[in-house]
Amino acid sequence: MNNPLFPTANIGEVMMASLNNGLWVIMNFIPKFIAGLIILLIGIIVASLVKRLVVELFRALKVEMFLQRYGVPQAKDEFTWTNLLTEIVRWFIIILFLIPAASIWGLPQVATVLNTFALYLPNVFVAAIIAVVGFVFGRLAYDVVLASTRGLSKDSAKAIASTTRWAVVVFTLLAVLNQLGVAADLVRILFTGFVAMIAIAGGIAFGLGGQGAAKQLIDDLQKKLK
Image (cartoon, rainbow, N blue to C red):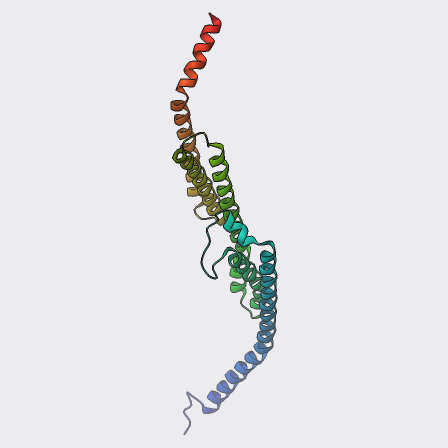
């Protein structure tokens, strides 16, 4: 005997309607899923080809040998500067293809997050370039200062050259952090403090070391005036 409050026919109709709606949603989503998947696969293939092209270009230019020659810190095995830069390029391309795929799949929030991440990746690439260039200039500064202070003792020349190199490295690290947007206000404060420290230290060193020369210059002027 059927319960008048819960008619069997109505329950069956509701279940069939729900099943039909579910099947309709699935059937409509499958073409979108396939289209997004094809776009993503194309992106992965293009990214892999571009990465291989950039790796071959770096090998032809002998970038790793150049960086090793100028004392740029090198990682072991696959964690090299070439792999780091090429991986950034590869993921940038993949994300560019993943954004429209997420939009096709009906995931606008995911597409927004990926778009923000894609806009941030160039900052990472530029920061890596700044780090490489900074380490190279640090090595060049070390060699230049070491060559220009041959009149001093060996230990003093190395100390001055090492100080110069580390100053360039610190400036480079601050520039990298600023490019990445990591605690920008704190980086600016540290940068200002570091410049002030170098200026004060240089002034004190010049003042103490140049006392004799300044006294001699003043004495010569006094003699000429007399």
